[in-house]
Image (cartoon, rainbow, N blue to C red; front, top):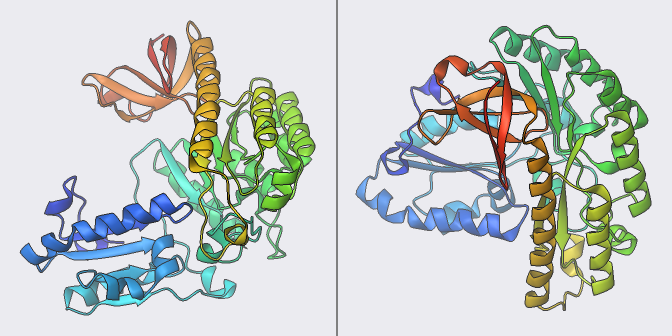
Length: 413
C-alpha cells in the first residue's frame, strides 16, 4: 500500500520519512514498549518536522484518538478495521492533517476490505482467512481490539493462494486469531478442514501451516487432515494456557485438561512425530502451587517442541482484571523460571534428536552469518547451512549436524 504512494522500506529508523508502528496489546509489556518508542521520537520530530509518525494495530485500536493528544508529534492512528484508509491518512498527514480512525466495521463491510495481494518474492507467504475472536477468554483483550469473528470468502482465499503459487511461493501459512473456527459462524463458508484440503490441491504449494488454533475447535475432521495430507506440515501451535481444570475454567477456555490431552493423543495418532508448540500463562489470579504443578505435568505429558510462556498480565476491561491477584511477583517469576527451564530441556532434546538425520529444508533467505542461508524443516525449526542466493526458494535435502537450543546447523546432503 505504501509502495503505491512512492515509499520504499529502509533499515534505519531515523532515516525514514514515515515511521509506522504495528502494535500488539495482548500483554502490558507490549503496550509499554509502544509508548516508549513514541516518547523517544519527540526529538526526531523536532529535528525533522516533515517526518511522519503513525501507529497501527491493537494499541491504536484500544487507545484511539487520545494518542494524538498524548503525543502531539504523532500523525496517524489507524485501528484494526481501518487499514484500508492508510493511504488516504498518509496523504493527509503529508498535507499537515493528523487523523485517528478506529471505528469497528460491520461484517458486510469487512468482507471487501481484506488487504489485497501484494507482489512477493519469497518461499513462504501468509494468507489471512479470518479475523476477530468470539471466545472472550478472561485474560484476553483480543476480542475488544480485533472485533467479532468473520471468515473470509472461500473463493477469495483460494484465488490468493493460486496467485501466490504462480509467483513461486511454495509454503502457505493460513492466519487467524482463532483460525480453526473458520466457517463456524454461519457466514456460508465451508469448515476449516475443507479449506485446508482445497489449498492442498493448488499446484505448486508444497507446504501448508496454520496459526493460531484453539483447542476447543480441533475437530476430528481437521485432525484427519494430518493423516491424509502430506503437504500439511506435521507441526501445530495448540495453546493450553494452563494444565489445571479450575484455572482453565476461570480463564473461560472452553475445554478441560483431559479433553486437551485427548486432542493431543488424536493428533499424535494421525501424524506420528507431529511437533506441538503452545502457550502457557503463569500466575493467573488465584493459581496455587499445586495448580501450577499440574501445568508442569501437562508439559511432561505433551512434550512440547517449543513453548511461549508469560507471567499473567492484567489487561483493563477484561474479566480477569477484576479478580483478586495477591500472588507475589517473585513467586510468579520463580514459577516462570521453573517452567522455562523444563521447556528448554524438552526443546534441546527435540533438536538433538535431529542430529544425523536428513531433512527437507525450504530455504527462505540469507542467514546472519556470512556464507550461510537459512530455512525451515517441516516442523518449523530454523536450519542454517552453507549456501548462497541460488538456494533461496528451493526445497533441499539437508543433513543435520548440530542441534542448539533454538535452531539447527546442517549441510547439503
